[in-house]
Image 1 (cartoon, rainbow, N blue to C red):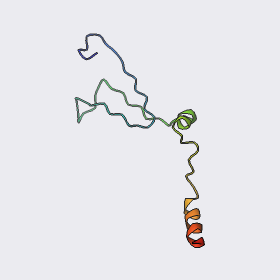
Image 2 (image 1 turned 180 degrees about the vertical axis):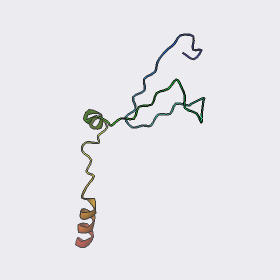
Image 3 (image 1 turned 90 degrees about the vertical axis):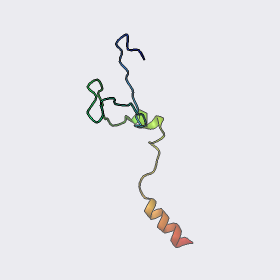
Image 4 (image 1 turned 135 degrees about the vertical axis):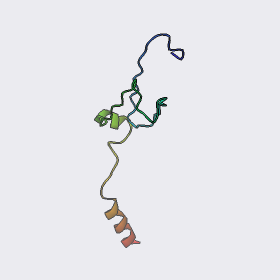
Length: 69
């Protein structure tokens, strides 16, 4: 692959968007690379532990704790 003797395709599925592939054509787009941005599936979120995260109501809980102290 490094010598590019045989054509190949790499599919990198990175639901956290933590990967980096260097673009040798920068700042122009790489004509050989396709970037697809997508919403994670429920299963991907489950695998990452994101489905059980509480994202609402923290403000109320913090105020109630401060008032009780």
